[in-house]
Image (cartoon, rainbow, N blue to C red; front, side):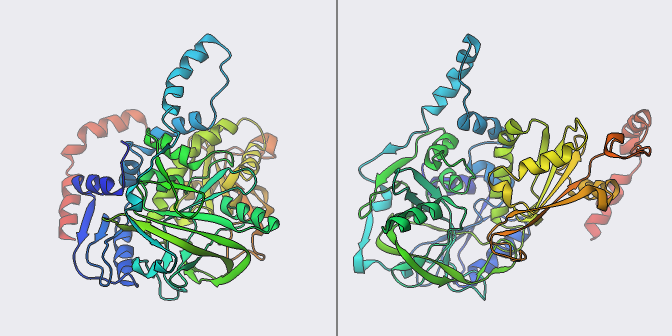
Length: 492
C-alpha cells in the first residue's frame, strides 16, 4: 500500500488500533519525550500529541515503533517479504536467455513505477516563509534529554546534490536548532551528505540543502537505508511504495523535495563554517559529546496548512529507531546473501544499537569459514562499523538471543576463537581510542573441525526422543499445566 502522505498513514494506524491521541497539554521540551520513552519501553502505540502549548500543529512520535507498524509503513505484512524485491531493485541480472528475459518482465514493470513524478503545485508549499519571515521556533521541535544542547529535529530527510555530478543523496542527520534561521547539520564523515559537502568545500562553494520533514513513511525510511552510493533514495522510496514519489521544485534552491511533506526547509551550508553542536542523547543510550559541525542557513520554510510535526526519540533501547534498523536488517539480508551465499540469517540485536553486535549463522563448508565471513562482512557498506560479529552454525536460530548466548558460552575457546582487526568505527563509538578508528572483534562460535586443530569429540546437543514428544503433545492439555500457569498469571 502506497500512502499518499503522513496523514493517510496516521488514519491507517488509527483504524488498526495502533495510534493513541493524547489531548493533555504537554511541552516539546522533555515532557513529550518522556511520555514517548515510557511508551516505547512497554512496546506501546504511535502517539499523536494534539495539544502542544504555544504551537499550532500536533506532534507525532513512535509511528514506526513496532514490527507491525514498520511493516505497515512499507506496505507489507512481513518485513521479510520485501527482501528479495530489494535485491531485484538494486541488481537486475543481464538477461542472457529467453527464460531470463521472461522472468525480467514483472521486475521491469515494477521498476517503471520508481521514477519520481514532478508536480507544479504541492501541499508542502501551501504556506511560505522567506528570508526574515523564517522562524524555526514556529515548529514544536523536541528537546529530548536534559543535557541536550537544545532542541533537535530528529526525523529530517536531508537532500543534497553532488556539486560536480549532480547525483542526489538523501540521508537522515539530526539538526540542532540554534536560532530562528540556523541549525547544525550533523552528517558523519562516512555519509553521503558529508561527501557532497567536502567536494563543495574544496571548490570553495556553498552547498544547497533541502530538508523534508514528514513525507510519506516509505520516503522517510528510505533516507535511513544503507544503499549503494549510486542508488537514489527517492527511486528506492518509489520502489518500496510501488508508486512514484511526487516531487516539487524548491523555491529558493535548485533542489526537489517530496511534494506531500509536512514541512520543508530550504537553504545552504557554507564552506569552512563550523559551530559547536551537542551534546545529544543518542541511540547508544549515552550522550554524544559536543563537536563542531557545519551550519545550515535556512532561506525558506514552507509547510502544509494541516501540518503535523513528526519526531523520534533516541536513547536506551528499545526505541522507535530500533525497528527501522530491524527493517534494514530484513530488507538487506538478501543483498548480503548475494555476496555471501553461505550466510543463512543475521540478527542485529536491539541492545547492540545497530553497530555494536551482529549474530550471523552460516552454512559452514571449510576450515576457517567463520573467519572468512566475519572479515567479508566488515567489507560490506555500513557493516564496517560493527564492533562484534559472532558466527554460528546454520542450525542456530540467531533471532533467539537466549540460544545465541547459550551457544556462545559453550562453543568457544577464547584464545582460539576470538580475533581482532582495526578499521573504521561509527562516529558515535565513544569507547574507541580515536574518532572514527578503532578495533573490532569476531567470535567463531561454530562447531570446530579436526582441520581447525580440534582433535576431541564434539558432543551432541541434548534433545528429547521425538516419539515421546509426540505422545506428550497429545496429552498436554490433560495435564493441567496451562490452566495452572494461567491462574498464577492472573494472581500476579
